[in-house]
Image: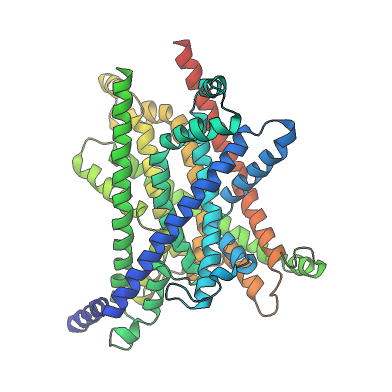
Length: 259
Length: 233
């Protein structure tokens, strides 16, 4: 009994010693990181626009834009990401730029990756919009008036005065949003895209071929998912240490400036 | 948007409305049970993280860090496949409920920890000087004061929990989103993408929006009160 168990575990670890599989998993990790980074960067851009529109389009002429931003944010915040992935997979158009072979993927895979990433970007922007709005609300009214008195118009004072301060205030929150986005990107596994989680699932589903035993054992589940969990943990934990470091600095700065 | 305005597709959705109702009820059921699990775990680990014993703090820390830094999807898959490949399968719903409960337990623990730590240290000392034991202090003095700080982020976590029930799809659950997907891709029912996704999204929205509105209103009121009390000083 013990001997077969031992053999199963050795066979499972053998999967991880195959070069092709290691490269496959690492490429998946790379895709996870890149997709999340793109989602957060584009999310900050869209999110800033949404937050600014939601907060400052109060004139009756432009109020329609405010309501549109509010609707967008609330709809995306209160429905699951998976729904948006499904919707984008069916309805999202793919520009011809992404409709052929790219990054060593087949054209079907690139299309799917593009559609699912769009869903992630749309979803992340709504969350980041709320984060940035929190930052905007913390900027005192005097800053607007100061900008106005120096001859900045509303758009200029937004871009040069308000937004930089607001984003600086919420940098730790934005960084922890990257952690959330990396975790959320695992939802893309539901439509079998190319990131870490779905690749690990694919390997598990054919683990019987790789471990040389002809069937899938519990040890395969432990080894493969353990490997994926370790990768996610290393990335996210180092980010969260960074967040904690920044927060500590911020508190210190606050204390110093008060003294 | 294809068939969003086609009457046939809407009739199809109406004809199979039981699918959506069943899915919605499953989602509600999963949310409620895993909410109970997560609240229990959150309270236990939150109290452990604020206790004086280093070993208890370390256990709570490890639990929170490990759960918060790996995706829920991975945890669900891990639990489900590990149990079923070792021959002790407990079913899709049960594994889903347990892992969602475990996942959000970590977030609840952080929320409760932050709430307890926001209470001034003098309160603990005062309670001790009046002869309260640990649980008495927590129950009668600390938790009632921290509840207003705890509640808004906790309700936000509930919204996330409801949204995260969609994870059940990956192990073949019967929650709202999986049933919707099966409905739109099914051989005899397929095709009505627009209406079906709209209904599914609407059901989630109806469930989550009041909760998140409640949380943000609470939070704004708290902030307003804080600002007023700080200017009064």
